[in-house]
Image (cartoon, rainbow, N blue to C red; front, side):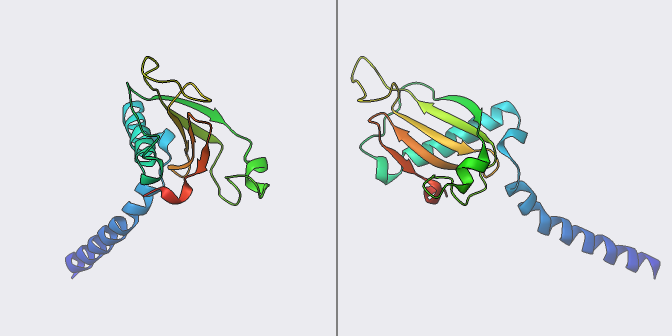
Length: 144
């Protein structure tokens, strides 16, 4: 009788653990990942956004994208209705993935890159792309 009770308990525990596993994995911040895995994930997110049909004329990729970070004051960006981050809890750590271009073949109008994609550490989503021609777009709804 005690064996059956223990078995039921283990099955119930397993089901609960499996049910919570996807939630835990999705909730993980990018900064919690090992560096190699983090960089691969950031480049994959950024590349998915940059390759979106909306930016097909601007897409080009020469060399390896670079990654840098900065911290933002979320109280300002989340409360300003004109801000791209308005109403979204993006967190304060932002990753910027920069796609270089071949300067011997072309010159960008405004910036020294083909595109920069801004990714929220907390949400693991891109929320902005700035193209080398000076245009910037809200990409929050383009994340898959």
